[in-house]
Length: 112
Image (cartoon, rainbow, N blue to C red; front, top):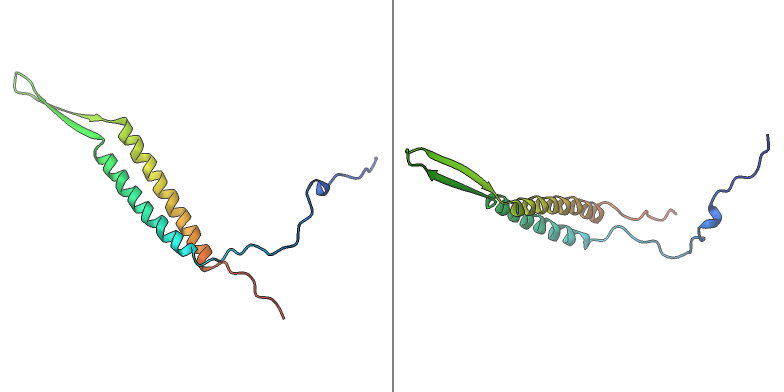
């Protein structure tokens, strides 16, 4: 069996440059989280409004006195409601992330 050295790929990456490390704990992230929650509430309200207005009820009376009721769905408004609901959910997930970074992620204290 021939044992040849295997490439590690270390030579493909540039060496790390010394410099200040980026801080994750930034208190202004709380403000970003609050704005994202407000935008999510607004998007949720708009999604509800689009969903509510996407259905029209059509009532028809025939000559023999029968009442026929049908519902007409507007696809554009349904799609807008689904899209706005998705945006609201993503905003809420990112707001939780921003809030957790604002509160918990602190740089380690130097030893000594």
